[in-house]
Image (cartoon, rainbow, N blue to C red; front, side, top):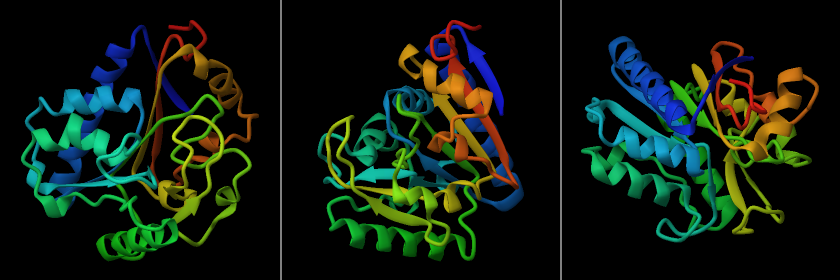
Length: 235
């Protein structure tokens, strides 16, 4: 795995914004548009607030989500709601370029509808230019949790998963599978905080078997941006 370690979360966010802008520029130049799968969480939120201040080709950018809680878009816990408030509502993105997971629908229906939208947009393979990802203290990423049957899914791009362990709210989620995540051009993990250090150390040794370690794009790149706390004090 490629990893970059930063002295502060702020430095991590600055680097993530640089990489984001670079991916946008390359994708638009080469293919005329850019597609990204967004993550939830506090570290991505800080990135989104920063990106809202940049001048980017918003008309040519398409926004998806790696996962979503089965709640309404304005309810607490909505990954879409967080991204919209922190970022998307502050820049001139065409409404049709925002491809959210409809968490207010019954979970299976939301998963099927989202997969259909992805297949309509991408065709045979969900080739995101960028997948922004985080990692929980248990080693999960997106809503792919340790022990979940979703970890073994090889056909579907999207599944719904029950969720009965912290963090709250404890509701069913809809998530991209490894089939979709590992087809991206760049998987970019953003990890901060000392609570992540034990799991990150296991992943760096290549011995964890944790969900986050299973993100390995065979035809893309993988980069972890972590702060020194998550790296166990390393800088």
